[in-house]
Amino acid sequence: MKILVVYDSIAGNTEKVAQAIGNALSGDIRVVRTGEVNPEALGGIDLLIVGSPTHGSRPTPEIKTFLGKIPEKGLQNIKVAAFDTRINSTFTRLFGHAASKIADNLKKKGGNLVIAAEGFIVEGSKGPLKAGELERAALWIKQISL
Image (cartoon, rainbow, N blue to C red; front, side):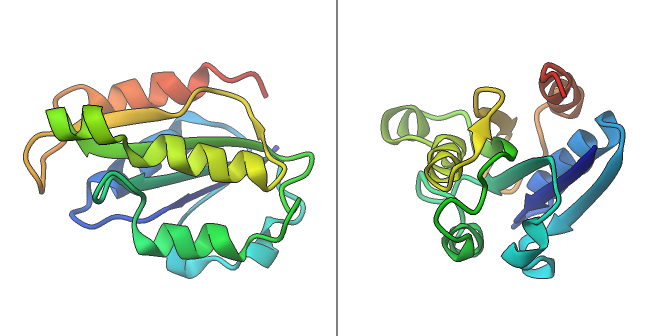
């Protein structure tokens, strides 16, 4: 199985989660920062996982740019999943988070969402990740049936 994990990270927390997700899977896995991958590289993959910090209740501009470059129906027959890192705050609970917006975008591009979008908690605006979040990320992605 060919798996691509694409992420953006501001303080390094989302990168750690992306690496934990990649390490929890088996197969041909690439974990790359959004600037290191071109949407044309999506051909031939079986699973695309996209993650971003929640930035103003949205994904980062880099992730939005990456998603915007994926052609209409460019994810047809590709399994997809989305995650984010976020502060556990009233603002985030009221106004949303990046993962659900990423998941919606992936589905609009034809992707088959195989697990509900998930958020991993960061303590403070720069982190660190809340204790146990990397383990929870590995358990989250292992729930999908490939």
